[in-house]
Length: 136
Image (cartoon, rainbow, N blue to C red; front, side, top):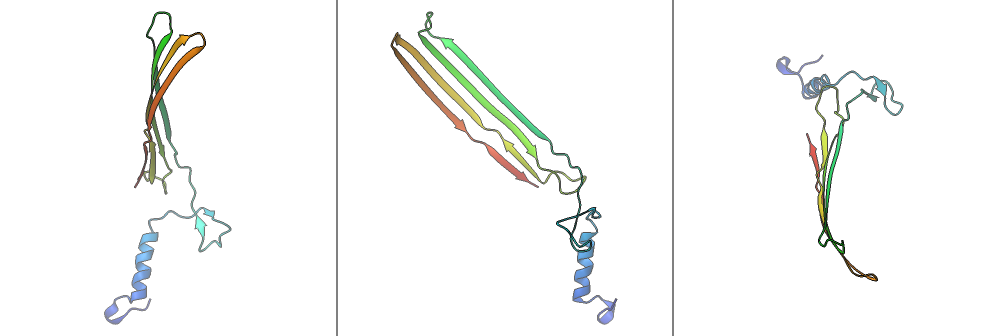
């Protein structure tokens, strides 16, 4: 390997040495990617864990305001608690990305049977969409 003055590596040799140090941390390829040429384009595949957690909590309360059921009230709440870890880039590493969904919602309704042919119905709701993405 040629060296510059004083036995120090030249600029090109120094860059090659630095890139070799980076690539030494990568695992040995075990597959071809897109019909690789076995030298420049190879890939690495491994069975990575891909955990997902999908929890949804819903509660609904019904209440008859009058004894005969002509006036009714309900309240419904919803909480989403989803977590999805995208697979790690290499074995033994933590996931590169975590997607979360913690959306919340509430709905209220009132129904009144005023006469046999006249019904009043009121509904109100609000939803807070809560999506998150954390990258490492």
